[in-house]
Image 1 (tube, rainbow, N blue to C red):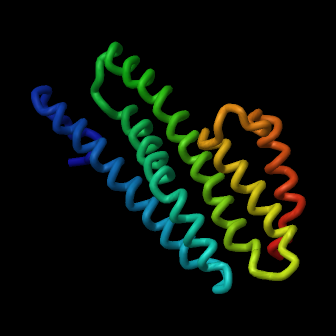
Image 2: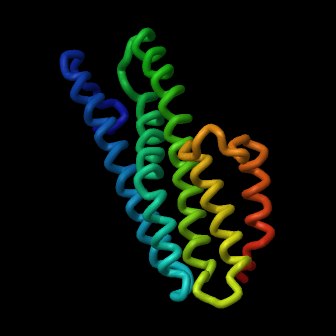
Length: 174
Protein backbone atom coordinates (compact mmCIF):
# COMPACT_ATOMS: atom_id res chain seq x y z
CA UNK A 1 0.00 0.00 0.00
CA UNK A 2 1.46 3.34 -1.04
CA UNK A 3 1.27 6.37 1.21
CA UNK A 4 -0.17 8.75 -1.38
CA UNK A 5 -3.35 6.65 -1.68
CA UNK A 6 -4.00 6.71 2.04
CA UNK A 7 -7.22 8.56 2.85
CA UNK A 8 -8.55 9.76 6.20
CA UNK A 9 -12.27 9.34 6.85
CA UNK A 10 -14.21 12.61 6.63
CA UNK A 11 -15.04 12.68 10.35
CA UNK A 12 -11.30 12.58 11.17
CA UNK A 13 -10.12 15.36 8.84
CA UNK A 14 -9.72 17.75 11.77
CA UNK A 15 -7.19 15.35 13.33
CA UNK A 16 -5.24 15.23 10.08
CA UNK A 17 -5.21 19.04 9.96
CA UNK A 18 -3.96 19.28 13.55
CA UNK A 19 -1.26 16.73 12.79
CA UNK A 20 -0.11 18.64 9.69
CA UNK A 21 0.13 21.95 11.57
CA UNK A 22 1.83 20.31 14.55
CA UNK A 23 4.44 18.65 12.35
CA UNK A 24 5.06 21.94 10.51
CA UNK A 25 5.50 23.86 13.78
CA UNK A 26 7.78 21.21 15.29
CA UNK A 27 9.94 21.10 12.17
CA UNK A 28 10.16 24.90 12.14
CA UNK A 29 11.19 25.02 15.80
CA UNK A 30 13.75 22.28 15.23
CA UNK A 31 15.17 24.02 12.16
CA UNK A 32 15.34 27.33 14.06
CA UNK A 33 17.08 25.75 17.06
CA UNK A 34 19.58 24.06 14.77
CA UNK A 35 20.27 27.31 12.91
CA UNK A 36 20.73 29.25 16.17
CA UNK A 37 23.10 26.59 17.49
CA UNK A 38 25.18 26.62 14.32
CA UNK A 39 25.30 30.43 14.29
CA UNK A 40 26.32 30.48 17.96
CA UNK A 41 29.16 28.02 17.38
CA UNK A 42 30.57 29.43 14.13
CA UNK A 43 33.00 32.29 13.81
CA UNK A 44 36.02 33.49 15.67
CA UNK A 45 36.38 33.13 19.41
CA UNK A 46 37.01 36.84 19.97
CA UNK A 47 33.62 37.81 18.55
CA UNK A 48 31.65 35.24 20.53
CA UNK A 49 30.25 37.73 23.05
CA UNK A 50 28.99 40.01 20.30
CA UNK A 51 27.53 37.08 18.37
CA UNK A 52 25.70 35.76 21.44
CA UNK A 53 24.35 39.25 22.20
CA UNK A 54 23.09 39.68 18.65
CA UNK A 55 21.55 36.20 18.51
CA UNK A 56 19.98 36.77 21.92
CA UNK A 57 18.18 39.83 20.54
CA UNK A 58 16.81 38.14 17.43
CA UNK A 59 16.19 34.61 18.73
CA UNK A 60 12.52 34.97 19.71
CA UNK A 61 11.30 37.08 16.77
CA UNK A 62 13.10 34.89 14.25
CA UNK A 63 11.56 31.77 15.82
CA UNK A 64 8.08 33.23 15.38
CA UNK A 65 8.84 34.22 11.78
CA UNK A 66 10.01 30.69 10.96
CA UNK A 67 6.93 29.17 12.63
CA UNK A 68 4.67 31.57 10.73
CA UNK A 69 6.26 30.62 7.43
CA UNK A 70 5.94 26.91 8.25
CA UNK A 71 2.27 27.28 9.11
CA UNK A 72 1.66 29.23 5.91
CA UNK A 73 3.20 26.35 3.93
CA UNK A 74 1.17 23.81 5.91
CA UNK A 75 -2.14 25.55 5.16
CA UNK A 76 -1.87 24.39 1.56
CA UNK A 77 -2.48 20.84 2.78
CA UNK A 78 -5.34 21.58 5.18
CA UNK A 79 -8.95 20.78 4.42
CA UNK A 80 -10.53 24.23 4.72
CA UNK A 81 -13.46 25.66 2.87
CA UNK A 82 -13.01 28.84 0.85
CA UNK A 83 -14.25 31.27 3.52
CA UNK A 84 -11.93 29.89 6.20
CA UNK A 85 -9.01 29.90 3.76
CA UNK A 86 -9.70 33.54 2.85
CA UNK A 87 -9.89 34.47 6.54
CA UNK A 88 -6.63 32.62 7.22
CA UNK A 89 -4.91 34.45 4.36
CA UNK A 90 -6.05 37.77 5.82
CA UNK A 91 -4.68 36.81 9.24
CA UNK A 92 -1.38 35.78 7.68
CA UNK A 93 -1.33 38.94 5.59
CA UNK A 94 -1.29 40.90 8.84
CA UNK A 95 0.80 38.57 11.01
CA UNK A 96 3.76 37.97 8.70
CA UNK A 97 4.56 41.68 8.11
CA UNK A 98 4.08 42.37 11.83
CA UNK A 99 6.50 39.59 12.72
CA UNK A 100 8.98 40.80 10.12
CA UNK A 101 8.75 44.30 11.62
CA UNK A 102 9.41 42.86 15.07
CA UNK A 103 12.43 41.04 13.66
CA UNK A 104 13.69 44.24 11.99
CA UNK A 105 13.40 46.22 15.24
CA UNK A 106 15.17 43.41 17.08
CA UNK A 107 17.95 43.48 14.50
CA UNK A 108 18.39 47.20 15.10
CA UNK A 109 18.61 46.55 18.84
CA UNK A 110 21.15 43.82 18.06
CA UNK A 111 23.13 46.35 16.03
CA UNK A 112 23.07 48.67 19.02
CA UNK A 113 24.37 45.91 21.33
CA UNK A 114 27.06 45.03 18.80
CA UNK A 115 28.24 48.64 18.60
CA UNK A 116 28.20 48.94 22.39
CA UNK A 117 30.43 45.89 22.67
CA UNK A 118 32.82 47.03 19.92
CA UNK A 119 33.07 50.74 20.78
CA UNK A 120 35.39 50.97 23.77
CA UNK A 121 34.69 54.13 25.79
CA UNK A 122 37.24 53.35 28.50
CA UNK A 123 40.14 54.73 26.46
CA UNK A 124 41.31 58.29 26.98
CA UNK A 125 40.32 59.56 23.51
CA UNK A 126 36.86 58.04 23.24
CA UNK A 127 35.08 60.59 21.04
CA UNK A 128 34.64 58.22 18.07
CA UNK A 129 33.37 55.42 20.30
CA UNK A 130 30.87 57.74 22.00
CA UNK A 131 29.65 58.98 18.61
CA UNK A 132 29.14 55.41 17.40
CA UNK A 133 27.24 54.47 20.55
CA UNK A 134 25.06 57.57 20.36
CA UNK A 135 24.15 56.96 16.71
CA UNK A 136 23.37 53.30 17.37
CA UNK A 137 21.22 54.21 20.39
CA UNK A 138 19.30 56.84 18.43
CA UNK A 139 18.72 54.42 15.57
CA UNK A 140 17.57 51.56 17.82
CA UNK A 141 15.38 53.76 20.00
CA UNK A 142 13.81 55.46 17.00
CA UNK A 143 13.02 52.13 15.41
CA UNK A 144 11.30 50.98 18.59
CA UNK A 145 9.50 54.31 18.99
CA UNK A 146 11.20 55.03 22.31
CA UNK A 147 12.12 58.64 21.57
CA UNK A 148 9.88 61.51 22.66
CA UNK A 149 7.93 63.20 19.87
CA UNK A 150 9.79 66.49 20.14
CA UNK A 151 13.18 64.99 19.28
CA UNK A 152 14.79 66.66 16.25
CA UNK A 153 15.98 63.32 14.83
CA UNK A 154 12.66 61.47 14.82
CA UNK A 155 12.10 61.42 11.07
CA UNK A 156 12.88 58.38 8.94
CA UNK A 157 15.53 60.18 6.83
CA UNK A 158 17.35 61.17 10.02
CA UNK A 159 17.31 57.56 11.20
CA UNK A 160 18.58 56.39 7.81
CA UNK A 161 21.35 59.00 7.82
CA UNK A 162 22.28 57.97 11.35
CA UNK A 163 22.54 54.35 10.23
CA UNK A 164 24.60 55.29 7.18
CA UNK A 165 26.99 57.45 9.19
CA UNK A 166 27.32 54.71 11.79
CA UNK A 167 28.29 52.26 9.04
CA UNK A 168 30.89 54.71 7.73
CA UNK A 169 32.50 55.23 11.14
CA UNK A 170 32.52 51.62 12.36
CA UNK A 171 35.83 49.87 11.85
CA UNK A 172 35.72 47.03 9.39
CA UNK A 173 35.61 43.53 10.85
CA UNK A 174 38.07 42.05 8.34
